[in-house]
Image (tube, rainbow, N blue to C red; front, side, top):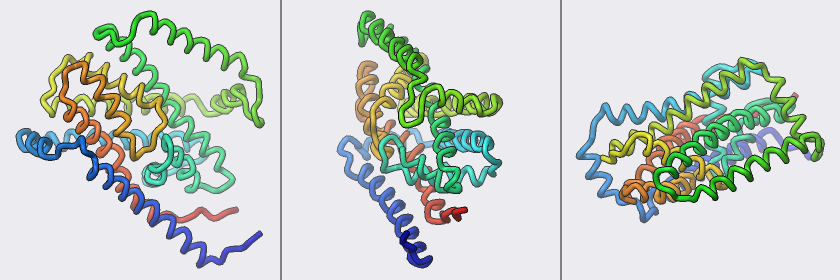
Length: 314
């Protein structure tokens, strides 16, 4: 086995950290500076008209709560292995978010969080992160499905027959999955996964669901209040059903964190177009949601990446 000198290893780790942070900043700049759909003059004019320190702090509080609930979720799940402080959980969540910004569907977060722990715990950490993200996805699907049905009942974007077929296919898929739960692929099976999930104490699962639900309500209502800030006044349930539908459909598409706003924005333009909302407002709000909930945490996470120290192998 090739032995790398300590100084060389330190330099390699430092170089990787700098590349991650530099790359994150570069992609953020590219998306904000070279997006032809963003009319900054219109945004500045509307901002000057409605500017309010209280309003800005109100919107920012949602971004804080969004990541805070995610940090508490992670701290809660890791307590199954060992207790970590709130500051440790913050470093792991924000550092991993920064490291995963270039990867499809944030897969880099899994490796990013694992690096904060000993190598022997890697599989357990990846599994806990799967549980952490899994509950958020389940909530997105549940709320999104009912939101889409409510929106469809009012605007008939898809026929009742199509809805029935899609629901039937979903039921069939679940039945197939559970009927094959004992079949193993490379030593893994659905039955084994369920067993692993059940090993985690129920109080941890309950807290995870509660925090996941709180986070979902926070970022969906941040979206809602941003529309109000841009003088878009629509019935609460119609607006919220459109928002939940957008997250549901956009989350099913493979994408990168730094392109997340473009995917959600494209879906949002279609839905809010049906509601008569100006396209530039939809694009701006989608971009703001991305900036407030991805860019700002990544900027903070850059600090944790640069100050990251590899765990000593045991």
